[in-house]
Length: 169
Figure 1 (cartoon, rainbow, N blue to C red):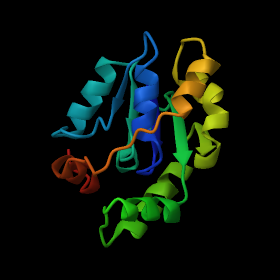
Figure 2 (tube, helix red, strand yellow):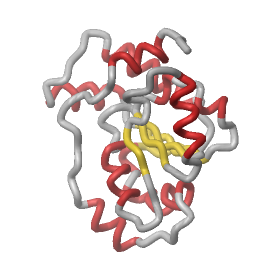
Figure 3 (cartoon, helix red, strand yellow):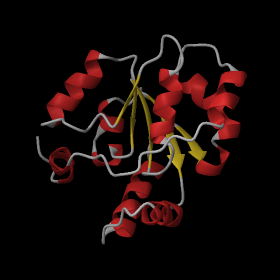
């Protein structure tokens, strides 16, 4: 199993595009969306063990415990920067800072390679090696570094969020 996670606005959508642009690699962005149960998420991930699962909501799950041998990359962007970025895009919710701080605390305890947000471009070789079996192409990584991809709205599925937040099955 392979996972890349980080707070919202931490280039998770960009990473999905980066990995999907490599022949023989598949990445799925926000795999929790649409899952109606924990078991549905587990089954989906286990059915495709070579897929890279990229999500900012994985802190809600028990993925690191369920798959202790998974390859994990955790992107760390300061919570204050995430909140400013969300606000600039008109995405504001009252409990954002508290919830994002809780998420970051979970990610800090997650096993794997931890990359500060401002070092992503310099760390692409390590990130690539950790999550793919394909050779690293520094020219492709450099071209992708110049590509600006971002979601302009929260795309999370509230029903799926509640399954995890409430500890449901």
